[in-house]
Length: 174
Image 1 (spheres, one colour):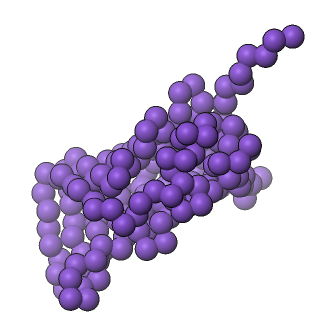
Image 2 (image 1 turned 60 degrees about the vertical axis):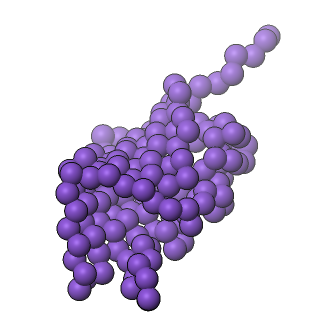
């Protein structure tokens, strides 16, 4: 079942499986991908002919309450009379946080033009006592819809080729 995938809407009722409350789903959906991106890093290398900037050494990038941390981030941009960053590629101990949601992976791609964040390799998503593990997670910041795939059994996940997780269930009165 290496191709198994689960698709769900963060704002829908199925979001309980994804372990997001309505408030958290609202904080991810409609994220402002046009907001400025602030960053801090140990070093920065401008590769002007390649239209990219390489940030290294404990990189932190923030945008409208969303924080990305990684060992290295490459920012690709277009130069149409000004610098327009359109993609961030992060590698090495990637952590993305927004409110009480925390996602970690080996690498991530944030496509600012399409408002998609893709986490790849040993993906872990945590909110409170809820947990989700897989090989690849794609978050659509416009719709709040996310898809997690298990990846192949030979991938870097510890899930044996399956999406795994635990979510809390509210206590019900009998």
